[in-house]
Length: 201
Image (cartoon, rainbow, N blue to C red; front, side, top):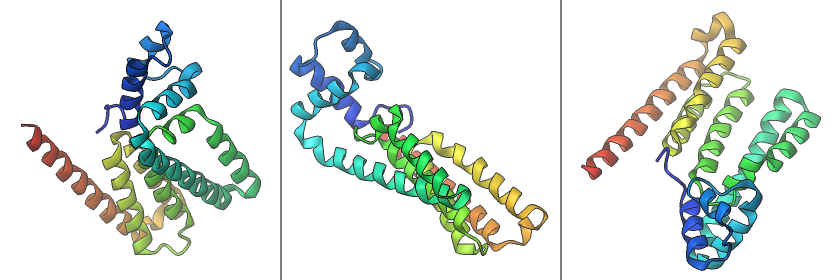
């Protein structure tokens, strides 16, 4: 799925062309790649008018976005305290990319939610439990399955384990759980990718 435009983006392009709701040529040229920043809200409005059947998908994206904000707050509160949690969550909610992905039925927001959930499990596991590491690895695998770029979460989680446990990393059950979860997640991603390739052949 990586590298392909989301369902909402495809619908937005088609909707704008079909309805003629926004006929400015620069805007139309921008839609051939991604909706341009200055007209993104207008593009979304045109798409909603032309594709009401996508409203459930857009609502699901919005719920996933709200979940991402909650996970970000919880994790930031654990690492830096309440002021940092509030500021970071507010800044995240105001970013252009968050506004875009959380309202456009894109798979990016789901991948980010899984990745942040994996990080949340890692940083909130004070006892070094096996199942927590396993859950983090599996969530990371789901993130990668949703979007290949989510692989960037794995070095961050591995570095956290290394900094947190240092020389005792091999004696912590959570480290082995994370390793197993990562392997299972990678296996699931490879299996799904091979199945998709076979369907295309």
